[in-house]
Image (tube, rainbow over all chains, first blue to last red; front, top):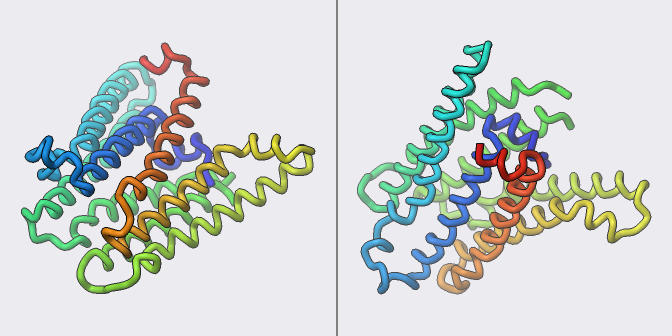
Length: 143
Length: 134
């Protein structure tokens, strides 16, 4: 449906960020499979019982992406003539990372049973992000 | 379809799916998981039609079927792995404890590995190894 370049234009993520996110998702999928199957429960009992450790690959990816965005933002700001465009791009990356990180944190709390939130409340950062993504989709050139 | 139309269509499908998922996860409904995934099945149908149309348009220029399959290997592989992953996840959620989790996760892991290889290969071809690190 989409080429990679089209996804980059729509979502405002670079190919490198997409690659890092995919790597994190792959590691998370494997750790989730271990958690559900209970294979490593006897080897790492504390690690496997905590949902935050299962989600740690995704949090690590978020930190990597945040670092990447800050470095790229500073370098672009120093080099670019159009500072406003650079700030706009930096703000979009920040919104994206913060909303995704909040969603993962709330999901971890919900799965751990530490918070009595409903799933509709846990998913609320994703719904906010979807609205922003819809605005970006409307801004795409009609070609 | 232009990029904006495709993006908005995908956005709408994801939105409906997330709403249905929230309703299903909260104890408000007891729908079958295959029903909850309906927006994704619809999206898969559109995706298959899209790939077939691309396939037929290219068919005019290429004579051999193997050339055509090789040309669209990423699209075909992606669609098949996506559908397989969704079916396996639905079956596991609907009939828990009957399917080993590794069998459920295998298509998903394969899909993610393929996507990583594709994105990495695209980056490598465009930037080279040095460009990647800078």
